[in-house]
Length: 440
Image (cartoon, rainbow, N blue to C red; front, side, top):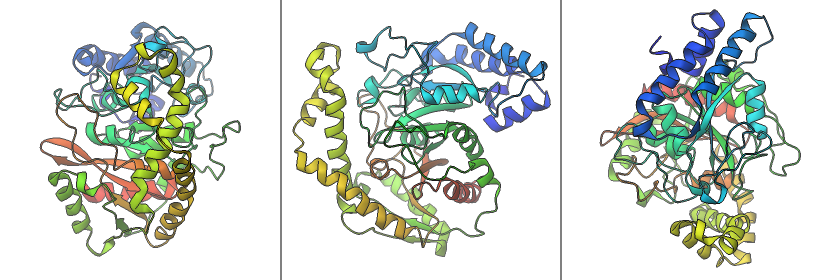
């Protein structure tokens, strides 16, 4: 029983269904791990062990009564503390929101509860899900950052506090913590997971994503989160097939990969460059180096213009009204954001579709894009959460990305990032399954 917290979510769901153990057994194993490690890892902004255990026992009682059960029944899930929970504080990692208790669950949280998940607690976010580092530490080496802004979600899954967690990405805040902490992470297509009740800082970039211990875990939780939200103009309006069903389908016997260095290549550590180049080399003829046409070479600048303009809109009021409750890093970033000309913002919005068309054309010849998920492994120290330059291009485009925990550089985890076309999560995960097995 002591190792139940180390199960993947899909293994745990199967064990619960067979009656091998109870939801209370699973929750107790997770809570024991939290008790043993939280003082070091600091993954939680809020957790109430008694409440979590009561909900686990209630889940067991519902199963014993023969009630209809959801696919996530009895599974503990951590929720990033910018996503509203009606029964727990949501403080957005900021003194501005200290003591805030929402009146309703976010759309995503309501969907998880409807599927039977137990919201175990709120995971640490950086201040306002932005640039200022949080208290969380990397469980692989406590002297290193876990990344940001979904620090607690990535570190908590990596350190076996819970099998599943939800985060958000505006630059690199799902994929980079997945890479740094050595777990599986999925940033889906923009708007595939609903954002209602989530703190927004950029309405054309902010994307909810998920963490797990296998690709099946990512598919399982995403299937239960992927619902339309008509009131959000950015909601994904394409088809929403089952990712678990997609993973069960046979994939290509030999997928083809487009290796893209991206405009951030010069920022990467030598070890990271060598590691991903080795993956490309091992794939042989199944992988070819590609360079998307202009304006892809300006994509970091374009993402920066969108983020700055929209972030200034959403957070500008905080700077005007309560600057004393903002960190120096947030104040400096917001002040700089006001200098973005409107013409740069409009151009960046327009160029997005131009680049997406080029990426979609590329993906008619390849199954996925292969690239680095970060400039290197998690940096030592806590002055930074890392560089999002290998993530922000894909966030800007709104395309799905997955990080596979298959590399190690300087004794620390480094993921392998795969990128797919908008709405093509099923194809992306099938391709990722093949590569995950190839690199295992």
